[in-house]
Length: 392
Image 1 (tube, helix red, strand yellow):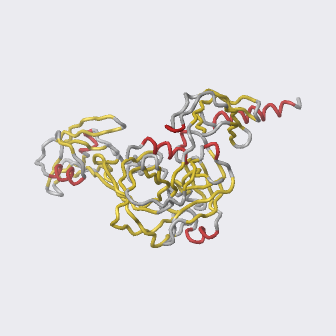
Image 2: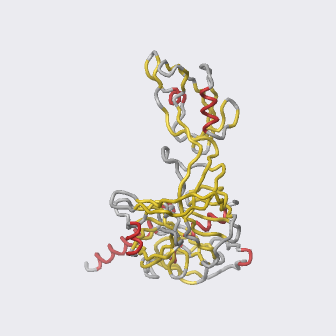
Image 3: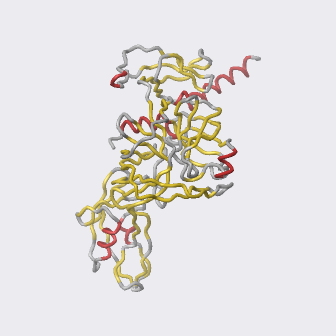
């Protein structure tokens, strides 16, 4: 009977490990891979890796074990050469133009017969991306608005992109006596602007990575599809301190100096080409996800005119599940100087690099609004792999 509580505890830990541990592991060296000090994988190279061309071995099946002895789950192992990037931590301005025009709202139109919603009745939904009107491609909200307003009640053939597939609808305007013209009850947007932090520059392909999370439309909460975008210089001119229940923000002034082009807006951040000189004083190796440890680390960010500085933080929680995307870690600001300046994590700090044990381990992504000294972060490995896929 004395063994029963022990067995229950072991099987509970195995169950938790099976849930929280990854199904695929990338590693940069031969040896034991350890997760959270109690789970591990013994890995011995069984194939030649072409480090010069950074090619990987065929995924090797292995097993994660508890205390190095009790099987927990099978995993696939991929090995690649260690990679280094130039870490930034600089604030920058973001200007994005969408690939198509996003439907951000619909509204009722008042007619003699009462209220109706032409857009909704046609089947158009918030988050749809309008790509064609009457067979003509459209790229800006001005084009869409001008075309829809220039009518005498004629139907419009509208082609939209929804969840990766295209759909066509017939939109029928109605006459509004109140406004004295035909209306379709549609609100659209084609661009956005904001502030973020550059995480790193990948010298392999001249790609810059930033934010660590996607830019989403404020109304639809959908990832904005990029047609083109610009990264511009921005100076931090003030900080709006955060507090419990209220997110703070960096106040920045955009400059006319374009420092790069933005080409990809993904679940792991924004990516593009960097067109100006890079500060090459901060060359760091990218850590594999399993190298990240709970405990002290440093955050590299810009909160004043002095540029990027390192501040102390604590990594308190780590999640290896792919479904968590940009929320792989929970971090806490422990640096009194940074708390005094910002109140904790504020908007505009997304993308700030996290350094631990001499390696780039992640980037800040979100603040926990109820406790702004805490926030979420993404693994640097995810951002690096995404930057390798980016064509710029």
